[in-house]
Length: 462
Image 1 (cartoon, helix red, strand yellow):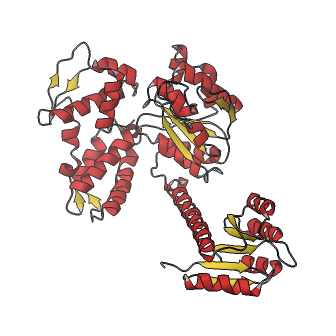
Image 2 (image 1 turned 30 degrees about the horizontal axis):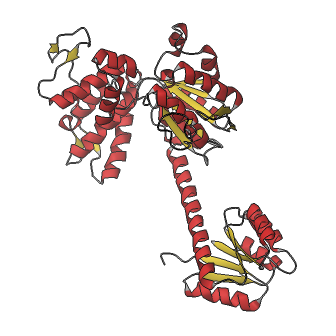
């Protein structure tokens, strides 16, 4: 066995204690035994056990009393109850108090070992989840935020202040400024950190599917609804739901979102059952919701419900002092990830980084550093590894293609493959239209489905 597991056996019959102790010892486990409830509870509190086998009928304290004491002290410690034949009602009561399972006497030893193995597997999953939650808490900690720009520091101070509240937060900022990272940081530094973080990109789904994705649907509620579907709000119960691109939702979905925010209730599509949820909402957008309200594209009452706390993230062009800080941060991340010894930038590459426009903000900078680390075979990143001049030509040194009625003026890099030119053009149009897929599809003279397929093909992200 990779590591020894420890099992506590609490039973007043010495023969049964010895039998179970030998069974688990032969299987490679460390065992401790106790002859009554009081001794068993004392041993449980003093030791570090992975599983308890607990007899229901004990002197001094009942099995249920011992179970209750164990769960109060160590709620994640799995307990398997051993009951007399026909004591089903008592066993059910034990399950309600938190027992993992029960086994009735007389039992087969193989059966006991199978139940114990399942309980230990559950304990491993609980421990792994706790470890992952702790790692996420470290990763998305406010101490990890790099950058010295006063505006970004103020944004994260505000985020830290609201993290432990249940207030709805609206995150504003251009594409790639770190809106999702901020949302995850708020979640993992909140009291909901042990609950789920569910992300929904509201622009990535067609209008007809977004309502079902958010709220779920019942079997038969529409064509192809062959089974009940649990929506993202249900998945996010006791946690946080992050509604990215909130400015892209339709009026119908806006109405349902308003009700969820007001009443914490909704119905699945095609259903009549009203569901109640406990969810914190964090929304984000790169669009001007105030202008959308004036244009009758966004509900004013929904805006005020979302805008309880508003946090604006500045674009990287306004954070020039942070470009080198971010670049060194991502250099360390991707050098460690790839196992390379690339540790610094040449003076020319730093100049390129600082002079670049960065329309994709931090995400584009991160992608550029990741690419450079992959291409670099030495310890120093040079301009040819960053490839900034070839990926984003300036108007000054690249001839522009004539504008058509359906597309904006586009720079035409003559040394790039057609596929790369297509990707660059689609990404630029999406950015110019604030990632509004309907508007971008109209400019590109294609339908939204084709555009969504292109976004997926080229792995374009807002």
